[in-house]
Length: 69
Length: 542
Ligand SMILES: [Cu+2]
Image (tube, rainbow over all chains, first blue to last red; front, side):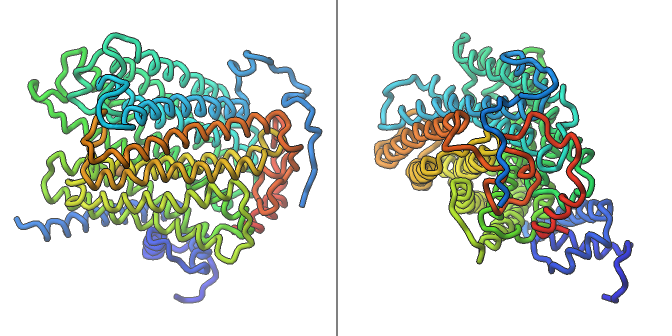
């Protein structure tokens, strides 16, 4: 949001955002350039694994809520 | 553009260093180009062998009733057709492409482990031989279908043992090939070529290699359990001994679904090189394609049971796998939009590689669509094990993987042989394949919807017309592949003239910076950083 010069950011939400954008394939060109400068591969991989876990978890919750006990 | 031609009458290996010629050159090959060539010819041989089996299947199914083959033999044909095409043709073909192209495209002198590379190739012919001779052993070849489900696979004759050993060997070969690809890409890129400046083909091959390392051991484990059940008194899959045949299906498909992507991702990579070249535009959304490919790879591990809806699973599990499977269509669909956006307003020309790439995009999308249909559990209960499934995965694997391989062969043939192929004949090969492919496989959707089961040598008479149509289409498609063989041999022998260094003006990757044919040794001195930067700028990579 703030216009700081590109430096490594520790904001985990940026990494999550990049992963979610990757999944849907929609990302501003400017943001995708920023991702590379601001995020390290380790951050992206971690965010990817967390997103995958959340994905599985929420699917299980959704399915549980649909199927009568 | 650049038209620096290499004197085409120089033999391939006209170099200062001494290396063996004749048979010894191939047996002791450690050069990535030689090994790539070996892989590609091996794959083509297997493609023809598996194709002959397919034509035998279609011959029997031309009309109802049993005409040519006993049902037992027919089942061996379907099983070996699948195994040979998957493990003998498509996977080695992509490994061959990777061997030829990756060092050239990332500016490396060779693959990281040159001797292991030799071994990973030379394991394949013995494995193929085991599969072939299984036809003549007592009891014949494996006839359990390419999935080798227990309890069928725990009961059959020694053909099954040969198949298990063949799978072990091919698995080892794939794992070694994958280790080689990962190490080469991670460690041997030219200075200045960051991961995010790599050509898309290198990215998809890298991710595929990771998938291979992850799932080939799972397959090896599954068939080893079958082996110990057969011979060493275990009961992993034998209900009488406390085992569970459904366990086999879970383990197999935990390998099997990522395997689909092992065959599809390199195809995505090829198409992502070819379409920008012939649209004369950079690939649209390179970054999102890299990420989407990674997403697909991760998600491919959590959808395996969509192959098992009809086996019996709690509704909760069915719903989970159904939702996960429909969602995996999102990143795959994104790629299709990326390719279309790349072509959009491009200055397109339709040479043979581009034709096959566009054919790929159209037909792969169709195969993906029927895949989404099958992912709905309630629908799949009806369609499971019908010809609808056969139609679906042939759209994915023939029009997908195979067409992309054709595209790749025509695209890089000038670089490999130093000569241009016959363009007219190439276009004819495309249209011939495109038309007869659809004549063969489109009617199978109707057959499946009407309830015709797969893996049967005989069928009810109401299925006759579409089966006849499919059989005629298959014969035409199959024999049409001789056009490719002829065109390739023609190109090796001089084609329609020497190929320029960069025969495609829209291509901006490193392999077009070496002469045609690519000399025996390339990039012994890495490409200069300025060149790498110039090319990435032309591809709009940053
Ligand atoms: Cu699957």
